[in-house]
Length: 388
Ligand SMILES: [Zn+2]
Ligand SMILES: [Zn+2]
Image 1: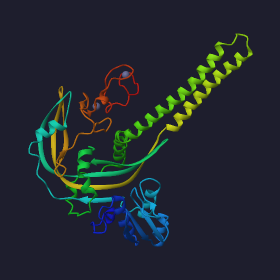
Image 2: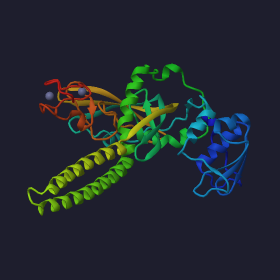
Image 3: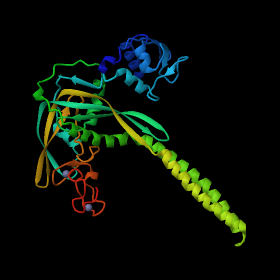
Image 4: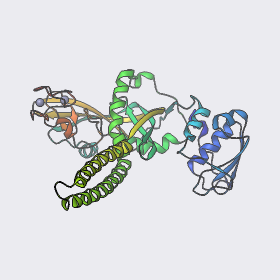
């Protein structure tokens, strides 16, 4: 269980240790190593052979975690291959854990207002039908993502699914994060039939795959902006350099007579400059192409009481009931997930046929025949069959 390695209480000798150092020290001690904290932000380690092999360190080693390293220390961080080394030491432990929280908390005092804030429907109305206590399970999946290009970035991505309502309640889970990362104090589970049934693997994988896309794009955005800025600068530099060469060659051509043999040579030079420019631009595109990989790290099943809100959605003459959970510890009502893109972005539009709640792009006009259609109902335009 990963919780075994949760941070020990801060002692007098470990005043302001970073999370990486706390994690490393706790894991090393758990594996039978002796660990002594040293300043600044480091530790001396006496490691048994199993730890030496997995972490690729000697019997006696000194590790550093901060910007400033203790003398002779190896740096431990998210870069390089330290995550792989820790994964080797951890093995399959901590990949799947279950947390049960039974403490109930009050229902929201004004559910109608909460709904109005959370459910921004541009083309439909809704009505609060009921709110009642219930249980749910959230599956909280952590992923490690790497973007490799001219530069490299590693980051963690968290995706949670409420198995009762099918939403991806991002803001609820980020409010619950400190609780998920804290040492467990598990309570007795409720009766199994009070909980939503586990999902079929295929259904889960489908939602995880769709849910990761928009969240990955958001997480990658600053990295990609930085790359694009540098790519633009490099392209401009290449352009300036080659257009100077080109202009110089053209100037030389202009002063040469039509039948001067030097003129042919200059014309060949102009063509060579254009060819070289094209090749350099292609090289740049290759250099900046980004490859993103995502790897599942761990899943926490969080079982806890919620308040289940049932809402009637009405569009023209149709209606349907939507369930959303209010999480009393996060003090938030979850946002319905877009049925087409699985993003948490708002507002929502409601489709005519199935009353899906989708982001505006999910009901956008067909790029070919201009007829609007629901991307959750159809993968292709129902009128002209163009890809949506
Ligand atoms: Zn069409
Ligand atoms: Zn639809």
